[in-house]
Length: 259
Image (cartoon, rainbow, N blue to C red; front, side, top):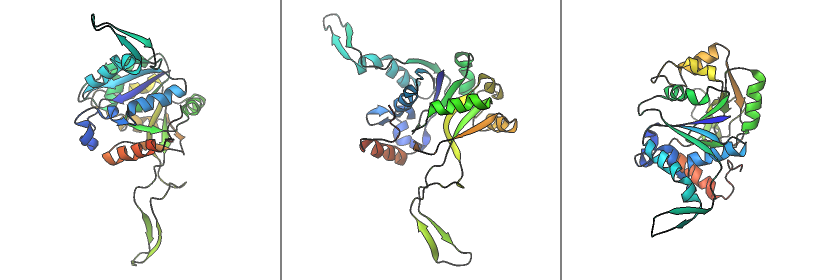
């Protein structure tokens, strides 16, 4: 089963970093966040990736073209310039890099890589969010219900202190700093999908946003299911999010590290 990673956006909400490199290449613990995502999938036996490139895509391409030599012990013959990998420390992954356009929306990017995934069920995720997802369990859930798309539903913890006020009164009845989600909290799209190729028929063209008409119409047709993920999940929309992830990594036991 292939894993498609959407990695072509501008990442404008973290422009402090994305002005220099694509957001999926922003490092957490010295490695691009996309590498952490790929390690999560690989821990579940999924090691074939299709990366949808766009903004500064050449940097992603160069990273993987040089990955094996950069990660391994190498002997360089300075007289000839030849380099030989003597101890290979790279992962046994197969990575297909596809230029899906600079201005293409998320749905359009999926439509452009259809030729690489039309042979069977595949996974899709964004290049900026990590979690302790049990991807094996999600795939099994997807196979059991038989619908076209499964999305991972998450309940992110609140960023701000929450409190209760009675109408017309200013006294605070109860205050809770950054409350954890509860059973009645809103569920949001956690960005880890399992998809059947037929779902791509819901995408019209480059201007189609995957999270709008395609998912809305799939839901209308009864072809969209949610798999609930209740443990660790964190995206990286902003510089603050990057620092949250870096702090988590520096604990020595980041909660998304399942490998």
